[in-house]
Image 1 (tube, rainbow, N blue to C red):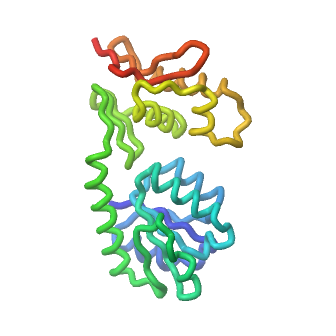
Image 2: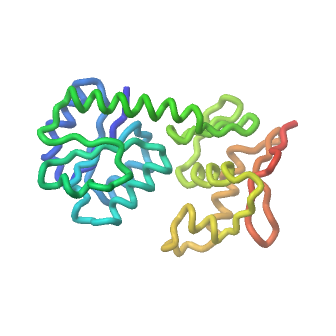
Length: 228
């Protein structure tokens, strides 16, 4: 079963569409753009996102930037739901994988969803990160150690993925704050230390050591994680 994130600005606009997708066997979570969609993204795994273009037109380029970031971070396919008056807004928009015109045909939309998810799954096989016994799945945002699924928070997962994809690179605490929490976060670099400590408690044990502390600077992922 595919999990679909359906983003709109008015729930009544997509009520029938959501119900129709559910009847076809999809799990569809509809939410309003802004805080709701950001919360859903961090709380649940999705295979694909359907974007009601009217939902983000009022938010301008900031909304598109957020969806592009979501696509890159989660390798998440994006389909735009559009009507004739909003067709011009997607011209040149490189973040979209596909679009469908209103009235939205369920059979056509179902085919487009399955095609894009299948393609994303094939590409995911090439993007899975493996370091010794540690496996990071960017599509599902899941981490396994020795075949055991780990319960990481969203920030812990983001930290681990960033470090693991840049083995040997030293990240300052400030750089990690900017990358994971954003430039407008005012919590201080102590936040990084706390999250690294919690992450280590979940992925490291006497047989596994992945993260090095670089004194007075920050952290790095070991070039050759130790296993004994």
